Amino acid sequence: MAEPIRRAVSRARTESPGDPEEAPLDLADFPGCRAERISREEIGDYDGRVEYWEARTETAVVVCEPTTRFHEQPSQRLARLAERIAASRGSPIETFGTTDLVRYDPQGERKVLMQADQILYLHPREFTVWERDVDIDSRERPDVVLEVDYSTDVRRRKLRIYEAWGFPEVWVDVPDAPSPSRPKSRLSGLTIHVPEGGKFRRVSNSRAFPGWTAEEIHRALDEPATSEETLAALRRVGRALGAAEGTGPDDDPWLRSERAEGRAEGRAEGRAEGRAEGRAGMLRAVLGILQARRIALSPDLTDRLARLDRLSADELIQAAQTCSSQTEFLALLEARPHETV
Image (cartoon, rainbow, N blue to C red; front, side):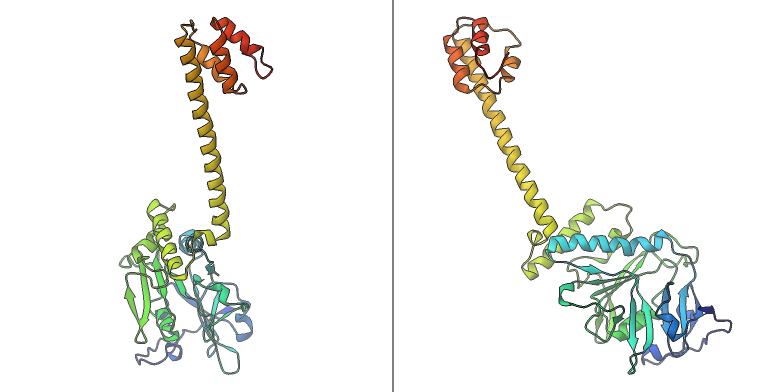
């Protein structure tokens, strides 16, 4: 069992530009968190929210506040948004939620562990086997990592470690919903961090999802329901990714079947509309024949003729050309075995 650390974790700060994994653990770098003692043997089975864990002190930094929907919404929403982008692109995108990101030592033991709120793989078909943890020194490094700072602040330490690990793109989202422990100076919004020259730089547009801006991503993650603006952005990004790969919506099995069904329904509706229009035109012609022959017609004759959908045009026209009155016209039609009027 993990037990709380009763002595204070060292607050000695290291300002050297070296590996942030080697810096002394400082709780000031993890706002909204507390420290717990978790052994090397226990960390693999620990099911709490771990911001950071290091083997050298067997210390885990865990989130203080309970899990709320305000923290969980952005990461869960991102998984659904990624599915829509993948469908528009025509190839899958995989998301794994909170997963252990691990740096192993030369003996194959965990050295450092962090958990992101969501990780995304844009080309999951490249991987035939998925391990339990993500070895950050392997090729299984995710294309995008999402951190949700509802009550925390990853900028102090975790972001520096992602930078040192060479992650290609990290998103930090601060939800619109306020947290009791979040400083009022910490404004909501999303920032995108990408490496340049070994250092993270903030950019306004995603590189993994071309053309998707930080402002659009934040709105998509935090809005109560997916807006038309967000749907348009998802289609735009998905089509841009597909254009680079030579794929599109018809390469996605679900969209392909939906689009095929829609086209079939459209053709059926078109045929039905065409038949209805043709039938209406034929009935107008029949009425025109009767009127030209000066046959007195009742006001309800049009409606009565409209119900005669089983009588052919030839039968209706022949009756209209041979009758001497509306009564005789209807009698001729009643004699037909197809319909009564």
